[in-house]
Structure formats: C-alpha cells, structure tokens
Image (cartoon, rainbow, N blue to C red; front, side, top):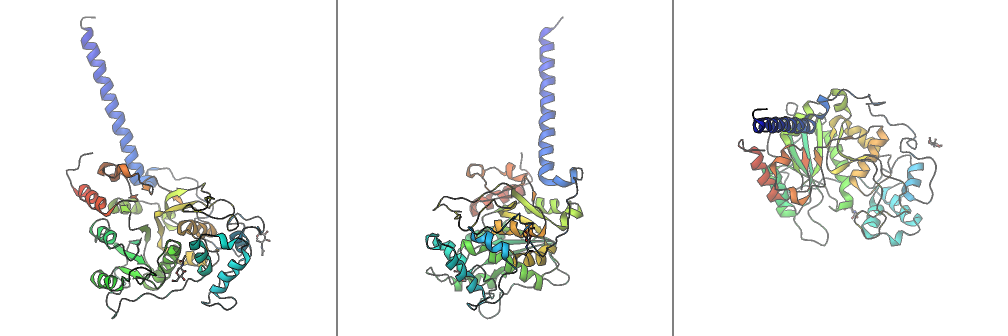
Length: 397
Ligand SMILES: *[C@@H]1O[C@H](CO)[C@@H](O)[C@H](O)[C@H]1NC(C)=O
Ligand SMILES: *[C@@H]1O[C@H](CO)[C@@H](O)[C@H](O)[C@H]1NC(C)=O
C-alpha cells in the first residue's frame, strides 16, 4: 500500500460519480413520468370497457344497493328516471323538483343558505347565453378547417379581469391547435356591482368569453360544465380534448400537449385525466366550506379528478350530457363530474403532474413547475413571472 491517501481519494471520487449517475437517473425517470407517463409504461390490464355505456338502471353502476330513504340524494338517485327538462314550477318542471326537495328534507331549514338555494334550482339547467349588446364579441363557432385539438375551458367569474388577462398573456396565449374560452355567469350579479359594460367591452376586445344568464356562484359551477358541453355539441363538435380548469391555475401548455399527443389511442378515447381522489368523503362539519348534511348525501364520493384542472376527451361530451340528465344534482362540480363518469362506466386516470393544492411557499420555483402539467392556485403575478422564466432558454435546473 504505497499511497493510502490516493486510494481514499479514488474511492471518494467513484462514490461521487455513482451518486451523480444515480441522481440524474432518478430525476430523469421522474421527468419522464411527469411528461410521458403512459408512453414509457407497459400497457396495463385493459379496463373492462374503455367505451362509455349508459345502462337503463344506474343503481349498480353508482354502487347503490337499496333505497336509502334517510338521504335525499341517495333516495332520488335510486328512483330517478331522468331529471325534468321543463323550466317551470309545474309538476315535472325543474322548480317543482326543487320545491319537492325542500318539502321532503326534514331539516332543510337548517341547511346553509347556498345549499338551500342550490337545491331549489338544481334541476334547472337550461339558461340562455348572456349576450354582450349589439351582437359583436360573440364567441365564434369552430370552422370546418379550424377545429381545436385542445380547448382550454377556464371557469372564471365576471370580476376576475386580472386573472383572465394573466391567462391570456401566459399559458392561454395563442398556439397552434389550442383555443381559449372563459366560462362565466351573468355579469349583472345580485347585490353586487353591475359589471355588464366592462365585461361587454372585454368580450368585444377578445371574443373569448362564453357567458350565460345565471348567477355566478360556487354552487352554480356545474351549469358551466353542462352548458359548455351543449355549446360544443352545436358549435365545435370535433374538439379532441377539453381541459376543464379555473382562472387561478397555471398550465404548462406545451408539456400538456406533448403528453396528450403521446397517449395510447385507447386511453385517449375515454380520457378523464387529472389529480384523482379515490377515497374522498363528505365533510360533516357544519359551517365548513364543503359541508354536506347527512340528510342530503350518505356514502363516499366516487373517484373523481380535482376540479382545479382535468382533461376529458371531446368525444365524451354528448355522453356526459346524457349521463347528467340521469344523475341527481350535487353541489360540487368536480364530484358531480366524477358521478357522471362513474355512470358511464369510465374511471379517472391519475397523473402526478397535476397539483391542485399547490403549496404557497413553492410558487417561486420555475424548476419544480417545469416538470408539472398543471398547478393551482397561483396568483396572476406569479403566473406571469413563471411563464417568463419557463420561456427563458437559459433557465438552469
Ligand atoms: C336497479 O338495480 C338495482 C340493483 O342492481 C335493483 O335492486 C333495482 O331493483 C333496479 N331497479 C329497477 C327499477 O329495475
Ligand atoms: C344559480 O343561478 C340561478 C339562476 O340565476 C339562481 O336561480 C340560483 O339561485 C343560483 N344558485 C345558487 C346556489 O345561488
């Protein structure tokens, strides 16, 4: 042993080299999981049915084993043929459905006001578009030659001018095959400022606002999903994928496009992709934000993708509308979408690149975001800064 120090040095060097190789390997496989999930993986067992179906009796699909008279949703769903189509208080009309709910739920009077209001009008789902005067600023239909590959459908609300502008300047900026639409309720509000003229100006300027004449409140968000699906059926039936998201999300659009283009066709056909919750249960604490009374709903939620952002296959739009006509109303839009997918026999696919409870202390880091497809929530300021950093070819991670 002539040079024990040399030997020590050599082994330290080798260890370091090994460590470097290991780190690169793991971070690469992490990256490829975030971007290319399905491409790198061996095809898993094919699900029983990759195609949607809607059986005449949905009870078994929805995991119902009997009439549960003590919970209104469960009881309604057990006996529901289809929801009323008529827009009235007549028997069989949508308002009559709400009035019956109020009369039959014993502790209805103790429900939070927004849940009461939701139930009274929950079966009413056809609302006219809110037209920004003079016919200009209408959202154009897709032309035969210009059918988007990916529609970014962003739930916003009339007062969120700043959020919308940040989306237009960042991840929603024009790109081949991508179309951006904001989904809003009426800007006339209720007991708030009337934003009609500002929203009308904005609509004329950008032609990317789809507005409907209903009150834009959290428990009315399912209306945006359903009215968008109906609008697509009439004006843009060929769209390949729809990203359903919110105006405080940050989407790494190029990475999302890469990911969608790499999907095996059999997955893409029934796609429902996002951050999936499989074991979620209703919150039972009165006064909490997602409180659900026991007299309204019993059981666990179906597996569903977080409403912060998820992608569905465009071809499922008519299927989802058919399912929604037969799934009893539920106040949370993302849980309701999960119920409709379950009714169709399609399961959500989880993707680690969707983070919808983005921790506030990590917003500063473009390197973390580079490996993700979607993060939410982010402020408009952070979105703009991050988008710039991600475009920078000198970005070192
Ligand atoms: C629907 O299916 C459930 C469970 O499979 C069954 O118990 C129930 O009787 C069926 N209802 C009707 C109306 O056929
Ligand atoms: C949803 O909008 C409709 C139509 O404007 C309204 O009647 C209903 O009360 C709203 N829902 C809630 C929960 O406020």
